[in-house]
Image (spheres, rainbow, N blue to C red):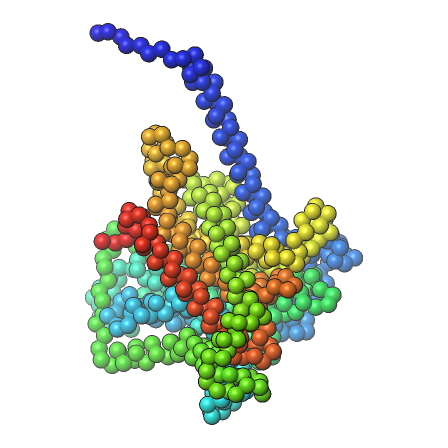
Length: 593
């Protein structure tokens, strides 16, 4: 057989042995620089501000906030007077909210997954809408209905009796419980889906009835129920939206409002604010410790290869009637009353003041659309939310890539710990940390002069959004097998080509969802906006609260309605464009057929 040889040019032969290693080294150096830049960003926006801020309570002199190098004075002040009362109030309402939300969440999970109850799809949509609605908007809706000279009084009904109940710990606990229901439902429902029917069959075989079966299910779902309690407790303890609205109007102090007062004091009391932050974190840790202690030494392994699909219980007429009453009550207390209160208040001219006709018209919306003072905050927040969502998706994609690496690494575990720690931190703690860290003299000496600017507000938005955005993307990133990228490279695709041809089609829908959720959450974010809003510029949430503090209830609620409608419009437009313009293959990935 004739042997065929091909002579390569000398330059090509040299490139085979020398050029390829050089290119590989350049690529490796480029990746190392990108990796270093990534970790610098993570440290600057997540680790450094919070670490420096928390250190103030322990060592004020280290950061020029007092004479003592080691002190517990800030903790002593945090555990006395109104601050102590705020903590006790927060603990009480958080425990009540967690118990109510966990009970309702378990009931909803059972009804939606184990029965043929009507309106199940509508209930799921309600829970999703409630999940996205900030707590302060729910509180404001209740206030517009019940406050003196509010909507109910404008139509001839005196709500003084109801107001005396809602304006206090009962109302605060109610709104926190309503806001916690989606978290409890998602936690319990995910566990309930893995519980097969063989346990129900065993109960029936031993003569047990429906109540015994429910008791057995509760025992089997103990980890999920305790997790729901811990999550709702942590969310309620760290919530600032209700503290800034209903609790403030009712003169009911809570921990987050005391932290805000410490930061807004003159001069600013950073050690006290830091000590309050430490105590908030301690409460979250205690909740998680109680969860682990309650489950210690017990096994809850119920999912196996023998698990069978549970039977769907057919509800009788009486049970359906009870369910419908419960459903209407849930809608009324969660979104019904707040929506009615906000919409009706926005349609009353001069509500909350002696000026205006108090007639029902669209005058408040006209004022918002033509007035820079009222309409400007919506445009400003929309711009910041767009930038934040875009940056958060890019950075979260890199974080998800690190977390999804098979086998993990020390840096991956470190990143995971930082992100989980950021989830446990209240937004107001993030804001206080940014105020302190980026106002230090050493930071200004390094040329980083962003305190009091929109850049600092944007960085804080990004820090609060990054943990949740990363969690939204890490699942989809983990499902992508390395062999797909390797196959693309074998066929001559570079890094960019591999990303565009392999990764982007798989991640297109999750990326769009993550962007929209981050945009919506940032648009109406309150604690970071209220503490870091630069002079001369107001985010929409701050604009709403400023208008309401001036007793312009009509203009404030009109801003609120327009902000929500604009967010819904962005969601509808984005999904519509994806449906119209995305390639057919992109739209088919992950869709059941």
